[in-house]
Image (cartoon, rainbow, N blue to C red; front, side):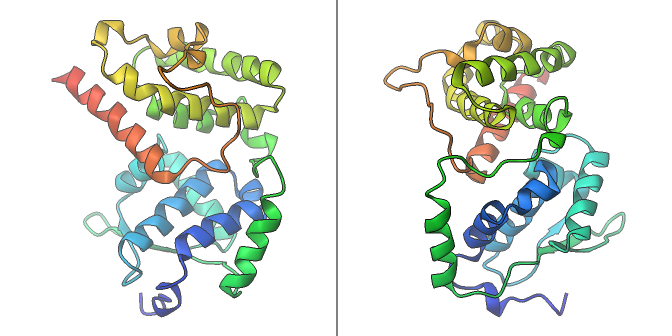
Length: 252
């Protein structure tokens, strides 16, 4: 793509500022979590490539990077991002990956962007998706299921997930979106310890949720009560890879 703005992105932590802008401007509310995940997946790879060229993805690669469970869900999310003029996408072919790069970021100075971040940090709650993307919406469940260590009895886990969200909402006095974020944080924090256990001692996902094991204490660590402004993409990717490795070990 000859129109890729390489020179404009090679300084001032473009990827971080772009993601912050999506959150702080409320844009994430309009596009939903899957489209947001696509944009994060694309812009972080742009950063890894040092903005020398736009990233290339086959659908399966982008699905894995973004934690999206099905190709139709990816297509819907990608379409939503393109229609919002936040993603430039060049269609690939059977043996040629599609080309992507993010767009829509306002032309502003780094100082102005930092000023916006300081203002946003006075708000104790993060920007969150509208309720139309929440329970019962499988995309949030799919994201959670991707990071859980076992991939068994998915149907039961999908039924248990809303109950866990309801429990967290009531006990922590937060809305459903914030409860989903807390559940994801707590799950990611607990997976390293669970991954060390023998498989027979790793609960099925539904059993883990129903027993409220997301509240289990971690040695030397208190239960996180404060909502993170965002879960870093590398933490989600690390959790997803850990879960995938466990599934591959079972298959072998």
